[in-house]
Structures are given as structure tokens and as C-alpha cells.
Image 1: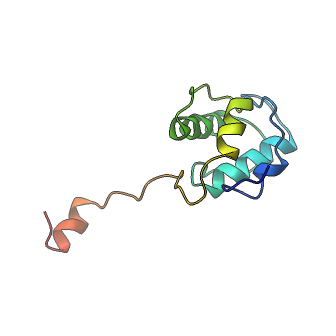
Image 2: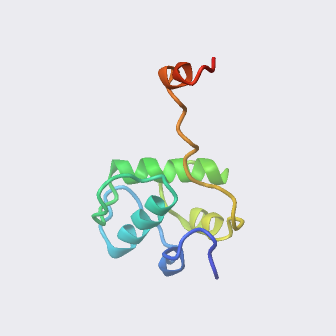
Length: 105
């Protein structure tokens, strides 16, 4: 299957990855989550709370059950996500001071 999201997703087998796991597959998952803007921590291959939260955010954006576990349903939903459709975090909201500086309200 060819993914439109990340070059790493193809190497992820649709296996269950969850809190406490340590593996190359978790490293691959963290790279994928980083590439789409959902994981901003050190890529260490440990499925800790930060990875779990990023998976929950991913599941939310994919409109599937938010389990925090990277399971077959999550893998499949990510692998078939439409090319060009943004899945990452939205643009940051400008601060009020930045808006005021530009004369906008």
C-alpha cells in the first residue's frame, strides 16, 4: 500500500503499539507523527505518554475512536488518508498583540 502521509508508514506493520512499548516500530511511529506535526518530542522508540497523546490527536483528526493505541484501524486510516489533505496541527493563532500591531481587531 502506498501512503500519502509519510514515507515511514509503509514500513509500519498494522500491529498494536501502546503505552509502555519500546521498539523500532515505535520509533517509526514517532517519526511519522513528527512528520505530520503531532509529535514534538525526542524520537526514542519508547511509547510514553507524549506518544500516546499524539496518537489520540491523530485518531481525532482521522475521525476514529481515540484509544491512544496505534492499532490496525489507526494504521489503515492513516495509510489511506487522501493525498494533500492536511492532517497536522492547524496554523498557530496569532497573539492579540500581533493582531493589534498590524491594526487588526
